[in-house]
Image (tube, rainbow, N blue to C red; front, top):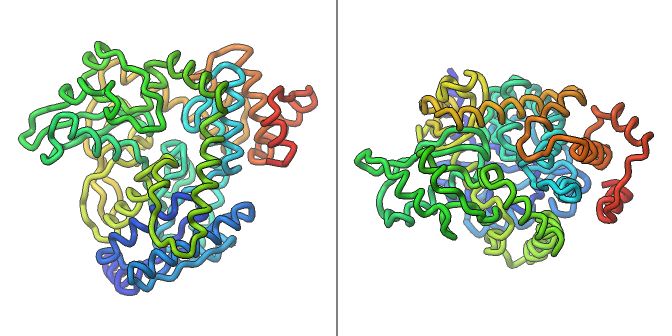
Length: 471
């Protein structure tokens, strides 16, 4: 019966809903769907956003329609601020939103840097607070999906993707969910050329957590070429995403581990160098989020052009390239039962022996109509195993804090996170972040009111201005 329903759906056309549809990433999403249209007959796409994103949503909606018309396909593009209207009878829901918009990311980055600690979107204190803002909204989305599209798949690439996906699957009980990240895609695209294997097929195995994974690589004959690639990891095009500073890895460490680390491991294995670079950049010209605001302004000026009907090259500077294309490939694999390999966040199911069976991990998986089936990795050696278990414990504390407003759990997460220095300075930073994000974390209202009564304020004029504007 289920297979018959899937066949009928494909014949009638697929309904896609994108929450955060006004994002500058959306043209890449459209490009990915257009490229796969012969396999993935989409009938309608609903782009959903909030009132603060209304103008961008309208711009993106018009451009998306132009892209489909230029491709010669009759796909209806709808834009709405009514999430429930969009979700009714959806087949796939993608999430790519940022609670508090880029102004919230500015706070996530500036406040830690003002305290001499790393300010970054998915790592350290900034990543924790992004999760605190996002998880309650995901609860609302999942609640609506239960009522309006109970058979839909949720494809998440809202950061921090691993934590959000764990919250949705493990805590909210929505099993039809897969989390995505562009970092493994970038590695698999860039690394073959490092060993003159651009024309040869390499086989990849990834395992770990989102933004905290390792991988190994084999040639077509099963010979491992991991260490051949590792020799090039400190080169300019060594597989690290362009938005991550290229602090050198210590090669003896990597050779001992025998695995290729995620680019984000630089924040942990070269923490001091990464922090000092971030502080230098901050003092010279502000944060990455402030730079992205300027890039977004340029992109949306381009998107307004009624003659533009394709993804502009400038979008590659935005960061996060290939997220959207990965989402399209994942949806295509589920809809067509393709049984292809992808690196996704999904429940462990024993793939990594040192992690709980129902924990969400990032691992090479087979994607089919039944979702993601992780491939067995096995165990990690002591150092990687210790890192993973500590980072997963930190994630669990953050998720529980986001769902309950428990300040003690948030403090536990701060203590566990390796990029946050324990002590008075970190507590002050946490208090300032709580007050700064008051609008988007109402579950912490009791704690925030107590902090405001103590007179918690900001020496930074930009953060003060954003708060004064209600952002």
